[in-house]
Image 1 (tube, rainbow, N blue to C red):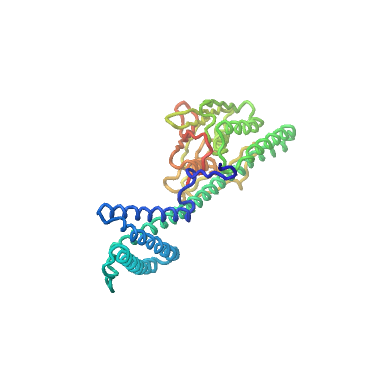
Image 2 (cartoon, rainbow, N blue to C red):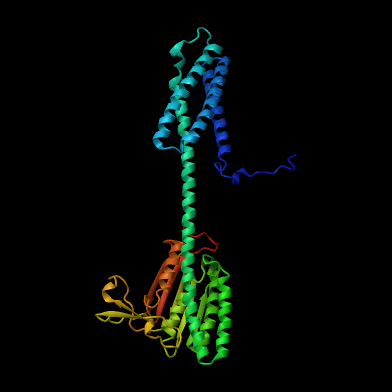
Length: 412
């Protein structure tokens, strides 16, 4: 019967998505209800069937007048408040007077034809008509102001989402030069040492790692399983330098393998552990990555068996922060930054003078703060990030994130 006609699922369409359709529906339903209720009231008070005629005329009058009012209101709603309310009140008074005149005339003509009203008697119904029209006006302005506010809030949410996406992209792009500097510096060292085969192998693995990571958008969410595969690619590159001194271990609960998190979130932690746990120790260190479901969240632990975070006493004059150097080549003096002691804020974690000590704040300052910012941009306050020394030795980072298995939008 309805072949060739597209079926529209009204349940999936918001009522006010089409404002014109919503207006006509409300206008028609509202005045139809007015007519039915007023006619029933007249019949209940034994006013006879003839009462329906002036009631119908009053309904048509109200329907028509409010259509004209909606045209004026549509222009006034964008004007200054003083102009909007002043002209709206004037329109209300005039419309109520016209409505009252027509309604009184209809009753006198079709229902009680004893005598025709004269002069001010035509305003006999102005109070009820004014109350009716002011209720209609309040409903019109209320709905439209609500829709305007909703549209404005939607625009704000889109802008905030774009800003958050840009912030996440910036934080992600901070990691690329940080990692590339260390890796290319190592490759340069191998070339200088004429170990071309190892340098070529490292370049090949670096290209595989970059191909894998650059395939994702900077704001993309990946599964924990994909993130671990990325870490393994990165560790293959570092294995070329440290060989048996670098001993990675992974213990990922299959139940959380498909949880989603920002891409390259854990790579700076592994890089930090290699720098402060593997590099300074003659026997290297173990680096463990574990993930499990705990208390409604996913807990990810990155632990190393290095010396941990150890602070030394500062020089009374200045603090020396060594620039990060992931290769055997010793940094020259240009890689050393001098920071006056008095310029450091009291609550700022003090940098470590000895570059062989595990620290949370020294060096380039990209890794841990970057992760903390990315977690907040993605999950808001529904996450935690903790760093501490383990009693048995070593340094630990604990991340807790919500259990999300679908790629959700960036926080707004």
